[in-house]
Length: 142
Image (tube, rainbow, N blue to C red; front, side, top):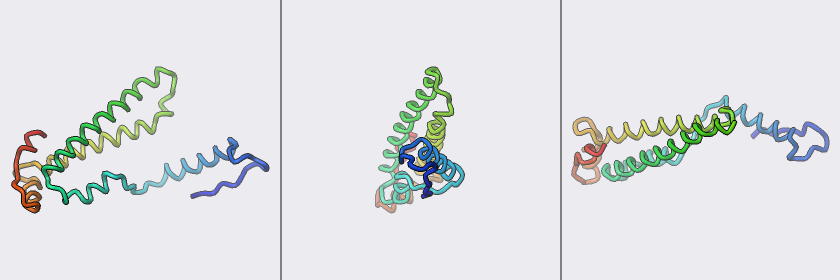
């Protein structure tokens, strides 16, 4: 973490000068240097094969529903806030979150298809690994 020396002698730790400098430093480093983050979903994906594919498809469908709810909430916020005089610049993080949620939704739909496709999907060998029969019921709900 970058340390910022006080700009003025006797400045309070909460002075606008120090807060502004700290924000500028954090914004600069966070904006310019991409790094891999490890959200809970990524961690869950790394262990997903431990669950049977039918259970995974059910969980992924629930996740899709929740992602749709979150996208709708953010979309409402983005659509309604400018009417209150708030410039879009102050909501740019919500635009970013919305794009991430849309990308995650597309990934989850793709993953469900990878599991449930009757000919090329991962469901049959995955179910066999768990000693379960492969069914196409999950595919029909997609």
